[in-house]
Structure formats: structure tokens, C-alpha cells
Image (cartoon, rainbow, N blue to C red; front, side, top):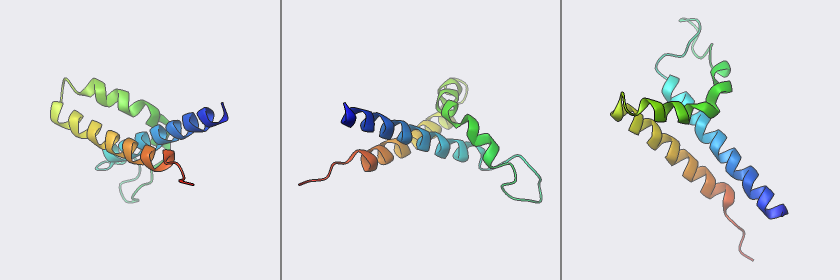
Length: 91
């Protein structure tokens, strides 16, 4: 039971990390905030990062190329972080 809980927490952490990476990727060209201060609106949009993959899926029918690029960024970060976090130690 303890091992399953640790795996679930690590998968959740991988999902949140991939969602945050996708949020930064989507908002990179035009970060809201003061135009003269780079990244002035940076931390507040990360609150909605768990919803970003679902928004990318909803965006897929209207803009297929951009939607596929967004989903590929999400999947690449998710798979990489899951592989790194879920690897087991060999004895």
C-alpha cells in the first residue's frame, strides 16, 4: 500500500510538472504584466497549470498544429519526469 501511494504521488508530481511546463510554453511569447519588466506576471498564471492540458485538448479542433505541438510538449515532459521519478533502485 505504501508503495502504491508513493507511485501515485510521483505520478501526480509528474503531471503537475508537465502542466507547468506546458503553461510556460504556451504563455512564453506574451507573459502578462508590465511590458518593461520581463516575467512580471509569471507566478500567478501557474495556479491554473493543471487545467492547461485539457485546454490544449479543447484547442485541438480549432488549431490542430498548435494543439499537437502543445500536447507533444506535455507528453514529452510528463514521460521524462515520470521515468525519472518512478525508476527503481537495483539491489
